[in-house]
Length: 342
Image (cartoon, rainbow, N blue to C red; front, side, top):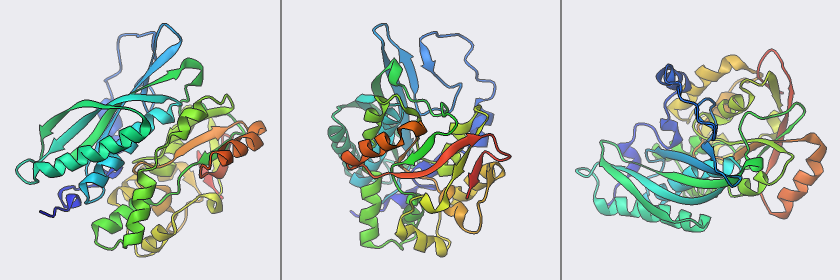
């Protein structure tokens, strides 16, 4: 039986995230009353994962991430979901230890052997990351959804928060933008076979370089680009810092295939949602820029800031590991807008 999973999802991948403004409304009044001195990173910030300090100088990282199908193929959906969830551990500078699955499945609509393929896809990525898929939980839902809860470990000194940027830091990005555009083209039946291969290649590439970046003292802050898009996650990095970012438009890596679809106004609905939430904080976003700057990424790249005194060392580090990267801008003193595109 051939089943197109995306026909069962209203929004695809990380594009199904609740809007930031709505999420803030939900969490308002839910401030943690008790003080846990060992909780180094919790829900007081918009970081990628929670971090809890142990007695031996190590810290446990805990995260969860799940979403509705971004592709039709069940095995690929499992791979992308797993890669996306594990990324939160890497984004904190940590090493993943194990994962458990989160599965929602409309058992009366989609055969269970297709759900099995989703789990097998996730197992392949977990094996690639060197961790077990150790269990999980499942429920009968109206829309299929899948993801992982992942546990990791990191030395306290190696934790990379998302909003610990410094003035004059250089911004690096490790994957091109445009994933949301391609996934929308797929859902509309427009995506070519070679473009689908590119989509899978990008979304199933582990951000494992994040663990190594955690060991570098001159990497000041790090996050991964997911449902709120490049601009949204950069704004989170700037939150409460009294700093701004200048981003060079021509330095931002964007997949060529997605540029062609953008000209046809093929992009996720939640791109507009992101734009409405973020545009008031941005200067220099013109014409169709918003399609890429606000494009909800699924399993996107790492965005991190580096002390400018170590630019050559950083470039050499990434090049010797054959890691794709682009230097896209700098952290500056506070400007009228938090992000300035030039």
